[in-house]
Length: 160
Image (cartoon, rainbow, N blue to C red; front, side, top):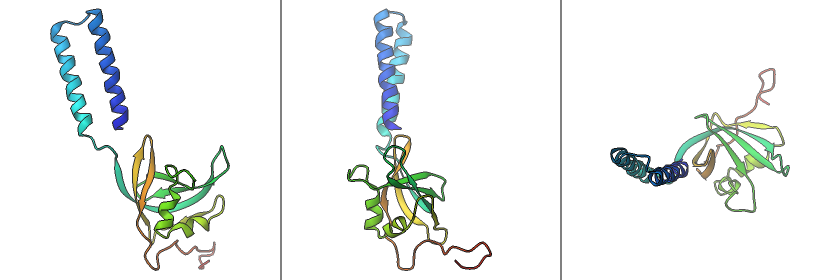
C-alpha cells in the first residue's frame, strides 16, 4: 500500500509540474496544491513499511500452479485472509521453509492434489505480511506436542 501511495504522490507531483509550466493555476491554488502534496508525503512517510498481521490457519488445501504444475498450498485463515505457501529454490519465494523450521511441514507434505486438512482444534499461528495485493507467510509459530490436523470423520460420523 505504501508503494502504491508513493506512486500516486509522484503522479500528483508530475501533474503539479505540468500545471505550473502551463501557468494555468492561480498562486492561491498553487499554494493549496503544494500544501496537500506535503501533507500526503508526511502521511506516507508515517506509514509502516510493511503491514503485518497475526493470523490462524484453519484449513490447508494442496493445489498446483497453472504455469509449472508445481504443488503449492492454499491456506484459509480464521480471519478470512487467503494465504498461499510455496516451496521454491528462490529464498524470496519460498514460504514452505517457515513451516519446516516450525515443524509443521509434515502436514503440507502429507496432502495430495485437492486434499484439505483442517486445523480448527489447533490452528497454525503465523505472521503474514502484505506483498502488494497478496499476503505472504513471514513466520510460523513452532508446533507444540500434540498439535496437528483435526481427526477426520467418516460420512456416518465415526472417527476416520
